[in-house]
Image 1 (cartoon, rainbow, N blue to C red):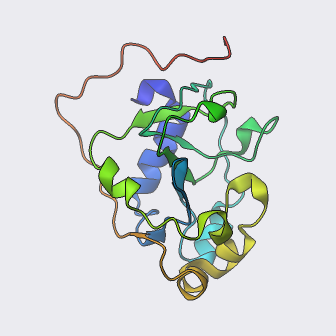
Image 2: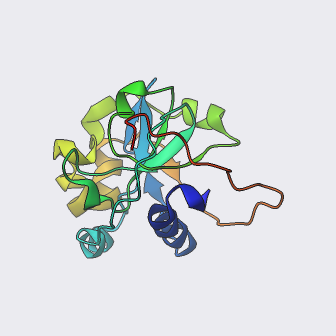
Length: 178
C-alpha cells in the first residue's frame, strides 16, 4: 500500500522497524470513531522526534472502517505529520474533507481494536491539534501509567513481508476532487 502515500508509509515502516512503537500506549480511543497512538514512552525520544515532521502525501481521504493514517496538526498545516497514527473504528465521513493520507487498511484484528479501552475518551491526551499532549510528551509512559492506568499497550511491533498481498491498483478516491 506504499503507493497510496510513500512518504508516510516510509516513515511508519522505519519507525516500526526501529522499535519506536514498542511499549507505547494507545492514548486516544473514542468508540465508534478512532484509536490513536504514536507518542513514545520515553520523554527524551519524544523530544528528539518532536520537530521531525514530514511532507504531506497527496490526500487520500476515504476514511472507511479499518483504514489508518498519520495524524497531523490540522487544516492549513498539512506538513505536520510526525509519529502518531490513528485507525478508523467506523466509517468516518467527517474526516474525508481533511487532507489525511490513508496509508492502508487493517486486514486482520479489527476485533482487537474494537475492544481497546475507551473509558478515557479524549481526556487521556486527545489528538494532535487539541494541544493537550504536553504531559504525555514530557512524562512518557510513567505519566500515562500513573494517570491513565487502563490504557491499552502496544508491546512490540514487527515488520514483515506479506506474500501474495497485491498492491492496490489505485489509491482510495479523494472525495474533494483533487
